[in-house]
Length: 361
Image (cartoon, rainbow, N blue to C red):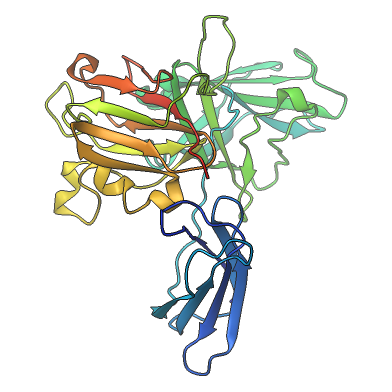
């Protein structure tokens, strides 16, 4: 099968346990399917040779230097087939994405398909059909009003704006909205005879979040933040950070229009797929933030509990940069944020950003 599985090992106090040995065995005959060793964060990645529906057991041994526990056995685990999840990181994201068409003048009639934020604008497309020889304006009739309010598009060729002798055409997508981020997935130029590449000829022009899928489509994160200095970036400062944040009386789950809010969690630039909120009660999912953070703390590196408010705490030996992202705006005056001094909230989007300091190993 050759599939990677990931896991985490903690000591009896819940702290990461490094250099632990993890083994997977086939239950029917005890044959070894894979093994791994945890890193300094207690995490491991194991490539195994098991097959879907195999019944296996996993053995975990503590490290040799500082024994913490007796060997652990997790039995009767059934291997299942899970689809590959493409995670789009926003670490270092910039507000533009350039598509280069090498060694030819940009043609008219190009279509580009993509998805924003995992489905907010599923199957959106843009089409360029201007007759200008050097600059191609977007025909906004081919873009939904929502998308045109979020993204700007332009096409230019070497006659008007030279890039290099090897790259004649450039299509640029750029954010219009500020203080917000959009994950562009499955971006494809719909023209089977057209060569294109999203990697620019010089490093400083590149969006560092770009990744390529097996089918040739691309993913990237677009982010724009106008800071006091007027610089662009999405790094949350950890200066003076503490290890916890309290949101009082709770994380908001009702928007200003009285509709339900669903939240997503981003940690260190990685947005996790789960939607969180009471609206998930009717379907399989997480109803409240603490109900999501606590059982997933080994993966996330943070945990949460409902105490006097929602308390979010780091359990990681590294700083954790966190964003709590709502799908709708709410009244920011309805909550009080205390704890780590790094916390901020964007009044227009409701995104709560903060850094939690590392805890001692």
